[in-house]
Amino acid sequence: MLHEHLRLLSNEVATRIAGNYAENIASGDQIELQALGMADVMTSGIVQQFPSKFLS
Image (cartoon, rainbow, N blue to C red; front, side, top):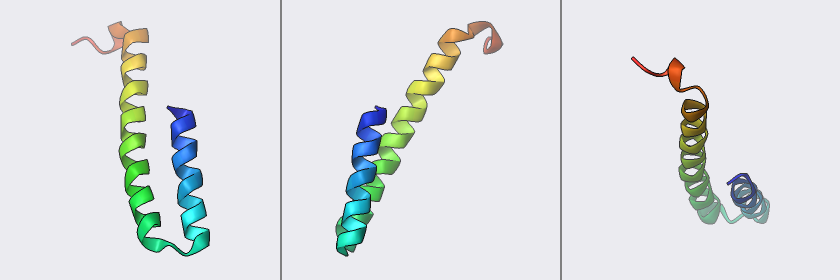
């Protein structure tokens, strides 16, 4: 997931430098969705590693 995030980020930078602002905004939207998914996966891993800390 981190490699995918870096790929998307590189694309966003390239579109900004090229002045393709519409594609740049679309890239930012993709990055946001991917980052939220990555955060969900990381959170799930933390909960699985420390289940007693999350039981009520």
